[in-house]
Length: 200
Length: 210
Image 1: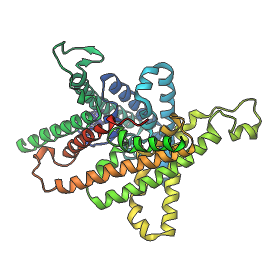
Image 2: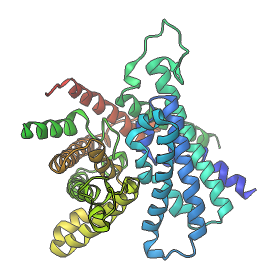
Image 3: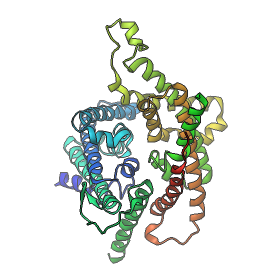
Image 4: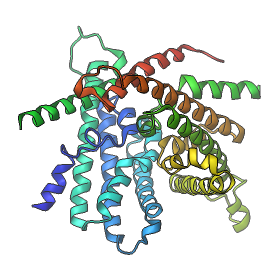
């Protein structure tokens, strides 16, 4: 039951992007197409899962004073793994994500969960937490990716869906579109929350 | 020729590919520290300083310890047949170097100039997780820049970051008095402001410097 709760909280209640406003750099940068968004979401989830597992296993051995450098080393080891795996098996995606693959190291979501959750909880809870947060991050990226690709290019995962009469709004693919769509989504979630508070 | 290349690198890092508004690096401090003008300026200078220093150090480490080239020190020390390829250690080395460097700079500033420490000190720990720093060091290597070019790119990237941050802080100080819809207050409106700034900076992409 508790595991289910740890998993579910990452998806909406504590969604890393929309609720906690963490991991903004990859969120904005790679959400220009659905494919990139999913690729980044999966890569970050893998790193999150790996680092949460290792950190919850070593949490009693690590001296408190040097825990952050230790966490960073663990995280960058997993980032190097996913970096090499992606370069080998999905070279096109690896190239599209570019510098943001090594930059998963400094994604605040991952260090944040290591410090706030995995270093204090059991391994099963940490796994559930990592999967939930990873899914929440992926869904947030996906929502941005779908909106931006659909409006900016008229396509979904590269397939045209809006027909020939649709004029693509190029701005959504360009950098300003990322800021705009994210700002409006954040506003939307605030609005839903405010409504909820009023009605309860 | 050399000066011209450096000039192109500087202009494109500050304006055309502004690190914050075009490459989305360093968004967290951009949103987090842009509420007041004073702290934005402090953060900006701390970033310029650490970024330049980190690029200098990481470039040397990559060239002399990690890259599979003849200048690799392990190649000379261990007398192997060909230079060892340690480039897979890049991410892990760079992040540790940056973290150590930030800690070191913090201690030096604390000893040398307590006044400077009071104004910059609180921003220094935050810089370790600023993706713009790791971003620029990795980018220097990816673009195969030499040492001077790397330093120029890092310094300019820091200037571009500071400029975007200070502009944003100036706007947000005024925004406090504006009548913003309830749901958009705080971060959402800041992102919408960033949209407008990014559109303005998109204008620089028309610049062609050859």
